Image 1: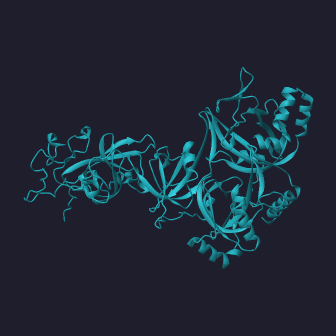
Image 2: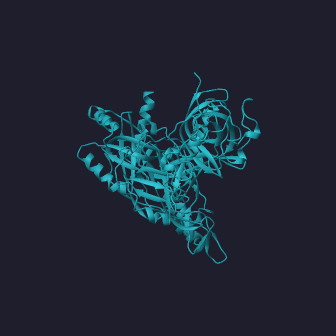
Image 3: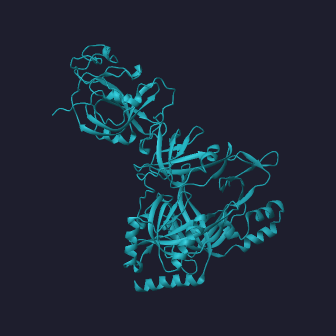
Length: 631
């Protein structure tokens, strides 16, 4: 049975009808190159309803339809989701979703270019000889065979009468530009080719205000995440004056109608949502609270991963996990590099995958949620904890930590939580789980710690794979280079972190930072130690930065710098250095091959320094001895 195209569909689309779901034919497909924003290919289609034809742009998520041959010249397709926008003076349909009805068909009708299309694109339509010659393209009323009968004529037309727009679109007289309200569209349909739009969504997460300093000066920023009824998610970011307008307005859990923002490519280093765009609110943007609760919009959306999957996740990956809290450690104060104090609390989470993971709570999470969890576990009740947007760390094994956009849900009413509770209460509590994180032993050791000797670095080719190798050696400090043991660093703050970039003296006896483009009277002094270590198998050179350098030298870098370069007290300086030699440490090393020009070199960095705990070390050596005897 032949397929009938939807009559007058092009005219209907041009007047704003987005619910028609028309059947159209693809007359032409062209690859128009890559977008500047994302470096992705885009396809332009020529679509026809049998009488009129118009250009359309295919959304990038549908590119596979063309590449796989599901959509080609002659295909009959049904448009499911689409919008029509003015782009550079012409009407352009953006196809967001469609289905192929007939993979291949002869050209239907004698289509001509719609009058809504720009003359720049009014070229001969592709197809067989039954399509009119070029002189007719773009002239809908040029021949009687294509002319649409006027209203009131009684003769039976060959096609349906011209599309009549719904009452809301006619008989209103002229309106001013942008006077009509923006149309609410799904978050998934957002794209930079649209004109006016609005989204209705629930706030699922809200970040704190962060302050920054760059070449343009000081500033502040905050962001929040939205979820709509179709499951689409997007992040909205506000800067400076816009922060003052909207920060107190936005509340987690409330539904808002938002419009007049600008779309920019999402910064995936900081944005974990599954959306290639994010919205930046501007001075003209509007945010309206929807007072009536919309039950169609979920309060949160999760993509839970088993704890066993965290072990294979990339460092800094953002994911959702859920498990039973088996232990909670006390909150401890931590002094940040910028001199500000925060708090840290660790807990252990297990699930039915047979794995456990250490979770680190930072800042307010320690006091608010951490205290509640500690009280529950202390009273022998082990709660289920769901973590939305936790950050994976591969330091000392795999662990998960909180960030500003993280959310914690204690004993949530989720099916996944009920399943875990049933598993834990009916045997899971006594089931052994292997930890993918550092599992602390008395004396600071670790069951998951990888121990090596110096000779194994070369023998096993450590550090020469795509990822760095992490391991611990018990070694003695044999030599410390003293000609350049530290560097002058920028003390300025960028957000909540110190710049720390190397600074230089200026002619005015000030310190200049090229990164911050500012001068200041005082600078910081940070360790950059070159240290030779040795054990019973060999020797190696390692680099120790600030924290590790202070552990090795036993004093701040500025103290040594003052002795050597300002007081010129070489004798006291030499005494301090000699006293640090031939001490034995447990050194956690990171090793990775780096390329300088055409030369490949192994770079070994000390990431942690511990004194040897001889009780735990004796136990470790005894276990090695027992294991070798059993073999």
